[in-house]
Length: 185
Image 1 (cartoon, one colour):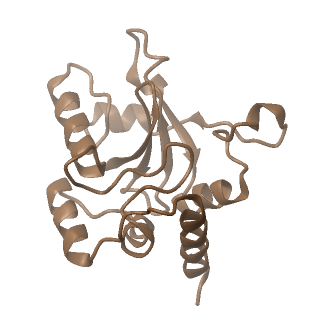
Image 2 (cartoon, rainbow, N blue to C red):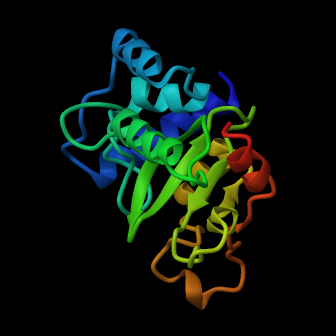
């Protein structure tokens, strides 16, 4: 048993208590199909969540998107966002960052599958205003594990009462945004 096993188990317990009708978890073949569509491997902890907890439907606020399927899901959203980014003069969505949930108003939480810890990023298009897309990217958590632990503890900036507490960490500008967007990677 290790810390990741404990974390995944805690997420599964919370997910089941928050949503009695969770989608079934995915098998390895469905995950491999999604990774083939994406063109890269998902972060290992994200794979475990989809394989051991459920195909989305749990997590903070609007809850994780399903990995793929007929409705909006991680693979479809990513491919749509990347196609739009490739067609634009200035890319707004870096390669390897998969949207895992939408906060509404064009905002997404995404996992950087190129980072070892699976940084969780916040994309908020509202600061754009015709300037740089770099201003729209924030580091929500240095890793997916920490982000999940924050959710489990009810201590995230996205919690309903967060504005009333002094101990809530706000997302900071993502230092890599400029280089990742300008490089197209």
